[in-house]
Length: 116
Figure (cartoon, rainbow, N blue to C red):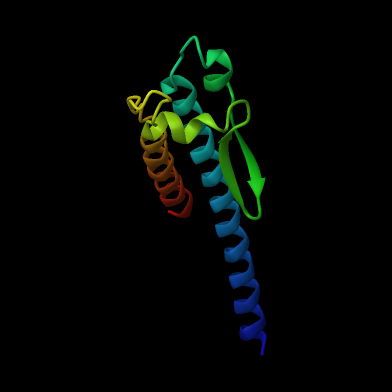
């Protein structure tokens, strides 16, 4: 009986440690994504400085969401390109996909480092 109680306490402590490491890894990955998006986002006179400065995070459930608070409608249009009024297409400026990959790699590295 004493062994079961000790094992239960050990598992609870390990669960708390893992959750803390996951939370820290999420924070690091979100910060890395915001930093990369801020530096690689287009700085155009039409979209102004508001687009690249608008990248931030918010908590959603147990996770974090990286989004653009100033010009959220531009993210898909700039990433994928879009049709214009005169029937032509604008060029795509991929900047979100690379930040997503960076965030994923940062999360994995931070999680591995925290759990080892």
